[in-house]
Image (cartoon, rainbow, N blue to C red; front, top):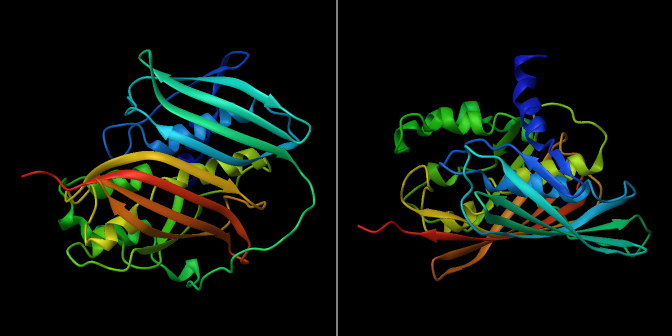
Length: 294
C-alpha cells in the first residue's frame, strides 16, 4: 500500500459499516475541519446502510436528508434502516443516525431498477481542464495567513486527503472582503481507483458533495468562511438526484451557485458533470450561515 493510497483506504474503511443486526449498522467517526463529524461522512454512511438492505440490481437515484444535531467525532454512530417500500421498480429506505441516544441525522433514499426512458439534459458549462488547476497542497498555503488557526492548512489537507479537489477560481477565503458572483466550480475525484460497485461511487460523491456547496453563498457577500472566522454555520438539509452512471475516481465538475440567502440561512444548488459532459447528479443544500456577533 502506497502512502498516497492510505487516505482513500482509510475513507473506504470509514464507509464500511459494521452490521450489528439485520437492519442496524454501526460506523466510526473522525474529526473534520470543524470540531464535529463532517456532514458528508454521515450522509455517505447512511446511504451505505440503506444500500446494504437493497437488491444489487437497484441503484440509488435520490436522497433527501436533514442534519439534526452536531455529531460527536469521538463516538460511533448507529444507523437504523426502515424498509419503507419494496415495489416492482422502486425501493425506498429511511435511515436514522443516532449518537448518545439522540438522532443526529435523518435520510430518505430511493433506489430503482434500470430502465430505458426519455433523455435530455442541461449542457455542461465551460470550465478549464482539471489538470491545469492547482492542487489543494499547492493552493492552500497561499492563504495560510488568512486563517484564524495556524494549523488550518494542515487540517484542510488531512481532512480532504482522500479526494483531489481543485478550484476553478479563487475559493471564498482567497477573496474575502470582495463580493463576487454567487457561483463556484470545482473538479474532484478520489485519490485512487475504486472498485466497480455503483453504490460505492454514489456514496463517495455524496461524501464530497458537502465540502463546497455553500461556497457560493459566501462569495455573494465577500465572506471567507469558517476557517477565516467571518461566518459560522452548518448544513441543515441536503438532497441529491443521481441521473446517470459515473465514477467518483474519474474527474467530475461540480458547478455550484446560490440563488438565495435570508433569515440566517443560505441555499446552494449544483450540477455535477462527468468530464465528457454527461449530467450525472443534481444537488441542493441549505445551511445556517450567520455573521458572528460582536
